[in-house]
Length: 345
Ligand code: ADP
Image 1: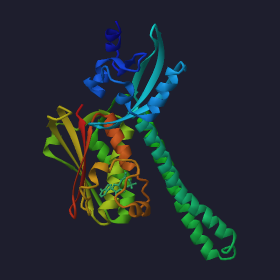
Image 2 (image 1 turned 180 degrees about the horizontal axis):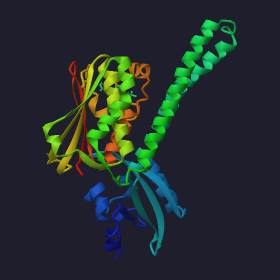
Image 3 (image 1 turned 180 degrees about the vertical axis):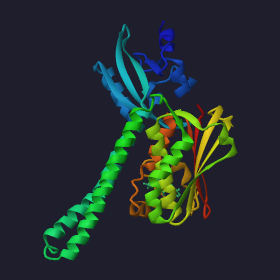
Image 4 (image 1 turned 90 degrees about the vertical axis):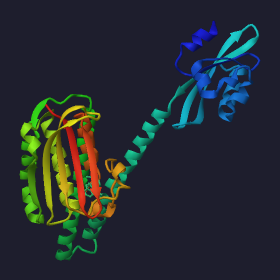
């Protein structure tokens, strides 16, 4: 009777008899621990002091207990929560052990902790600078108008940096909140690329960048997609601003549009936007991590240029929401191409 019931549960389950031996194990438990466990003593099977101590407590009278059970499996370390429940039998107290895989919960918790630590660190740096200069303005610079002017300028820069960081954090959480909502504006990516460039022109004139939109012959078939206009504009702005920032001054930045057929994950007609710069490029070592929040190749340079380290994370989330793909190719010394590939409308 016990076997079919335990067999119906997808999580690993063990039944330990009043004699302390493993009397039943469902398929998931045997897959986890091996077939050899049946009839063996539970302490030989589980062998982790934390779990064994909780088992002993239930054997000695506690109704139920919980413990953590860790294993290293193929895919890496796996953490289970084990719930131990007593069952009264004519022979004495038997135990039912239910294992729940909590690895994902742990990972999510860890990510949240890292994120909060990163944000706090990113905010603290400019905040410390502002507080430091305030003190100087009240103290040694009290009667020095030239110094006051300079310090106020720095404080303004730092306050702007905090403002950008908070703005990017809000964008990121908005995009995440809408991740499962299907966007439904009809957007012409070529038009949007031109609009993006028009918005960046004043900055480009100051830095000597030439910005251009280029249409491949294939784009004649149309560059419309179904999407969220504001978010897609943000993708174009973030990528183009990065191309200007990291491409170096006086270098051209090209936004190239093409249309194609994808045989990969997207399957079907796609519109591709390539943002191409002629900068230093990115070592391939960094490419897989570039879209992580706060990941930067050169933290000092990014900060100096006013970067928040969130631009590409935002891009990645928006592209995912559009069921698209972000592809980064780069050759050191030649430049980088950030490609956004979206299903065509
Ligand atoms: P940031 O605010 O630092 O620019 P992003 O998320 O936009 O943050 O980019 C992350 C990092 O990726 C940057 O710090 C930079 O090191 C690198 N990066 C982004 N775009 C380019 C590019 N076009 N060329 C070279 N490096 C780039």
